[in-house]
Length: 339
Ligand code: SF4
Ligand code: SF4
Image 1 (spheres, rainbow, N blue to C red):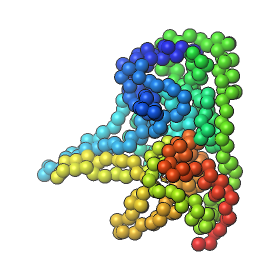
Image 2: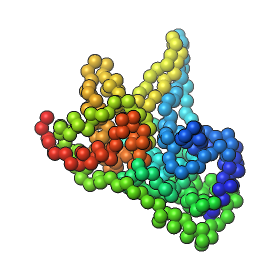
Image 3: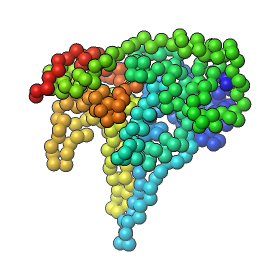
């Protein structure tokens, strides 16, 4: 199928009647995913949004349930968001990140109804990346600029139009009555050419990385690696695969609600125990944990690297920490099992 770029706003307008529609919108010099009220608000420019689409499924702050305790007992009211959503214009790396988060929120030990309900009710419409940024390294972590993992539909930019590839039944349902024309052989050839020409120039060698992390917990390299890091947590908040959270009660007397907020392993309070003990007192330990979690612990637990190569942490670190350099340093470090 094919859709003219000029017809995208009216297509989105039709969806808005039935779904909450999220799309990148322009905010000053960058784009962010926001719920849109008009298709004309979608800013489908090149490149990725400043924040990932993750927060649509796993919000930065969400009420889990409200409660009211009286002499008669406690009344709980669960707050599950089951509204139908479309996320339009998500990039393949962000879509893949949700498949990684699925491991965390849906596994043998734990199923998170808040995340899973949103996930089940959300359709992801992706746009492939014709011009990956210099900080993108998706192909080094088993992704790609036209990877369909996690997507329901993939749009391939061929100039004035998008060739639409159906990935799932959910995606097909979304466009069944959209009136899109069939893609001609020339359109399909143009899409194939766009895919061929998209170059991810940055490569990160992850060969042997996990094996190195298995044994270098005490390597002196960590003293050097973390030195510049301020522990500000920006990289964790911008990362599509980071998922640390904290749960607090927001209450007055006996009425309140339980709220889940994003947290960050970059912060000392994240691991502070009620006893006062903190297993990660230093920035070195916290930064090491971030790398270990993404490239060792997640692989141990779920068989995949918890990084999609989106490059946000590289672009936005205030002191120019570059995870590509960090990983190279780790690969070159000595294996030391002693403490
Ligand atoms: S954004 Fe940079 S300085 Fe801030 S915690 Fe991450 S690596 Fe450290
Ligand atoms: S670690 Fe950095 S490059 Fe990897 S997914 Fe997170 S923000 Fe993107």
